[in-house]
Image 1 (cartoon, rainbow, N blue to C red):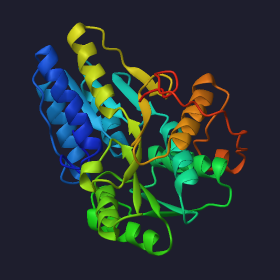
Image 2: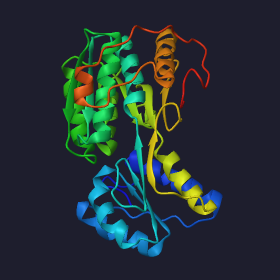
Image 3: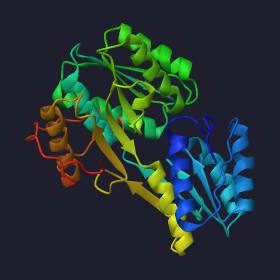
Length: 316
């Protein structure tokens, strides 16, 4: 069951569909998508899913209330809620430490920017987006205390025109890198970068979207929505599905960090890998809330790790 952005968002919902489609092929199950035209569709869509299937997946924190209402009505069925905790006992609640890969793309942005100004365009300021935002600011400031980070929210995950408008405003105010964390709204930031031309960059959230503005994407804070959906279907097929809280981080590979190596200098990529190792080792705890960001003290810059390896770039 999608949120209101639906399929074709080039992001969150499409990732969930990718994981389910691949699992359907691998495990011989029927996979069906219910698109939610508006929030009022969440409860009937989740209900239809539970009536027709063994496992129903709600894609996004915006479905939390609906999931908590519907899941207890079908105690013999199984559910997954992506991006938020659930109070229902038959729900697997999947959350992510988005702040970890976003810290790393923040490192890239802080080192790469030529104008000393970068921006973030958010969809709706819900907890997973806050984690993205806070981690990004911490990463930028850890390597470039003088850099300015401008932040704007569209209050929608499905308004590409608004995303473009906000990104263009940040570019015109001097930012040369924008990080859209906004689902389909974020595709507008890619449109803005392409329109502005050479020297204007974007950072990807959840999945690469370089095809939307070829040559303008620097790095990606990857989020394994497809991984969580695939794993849930696999567990169902193998009879090992368990409800409860699951949290994916850089160490587990449920989130990851990627760069476009011919665009980002090797020394910046190496520095980001060095920070990634600190995160995985537990030496660096990336802030995830506004309060944690307020008290965050950047660590000393680590030694760059110049050779790529699974250990150097967890989750890549």
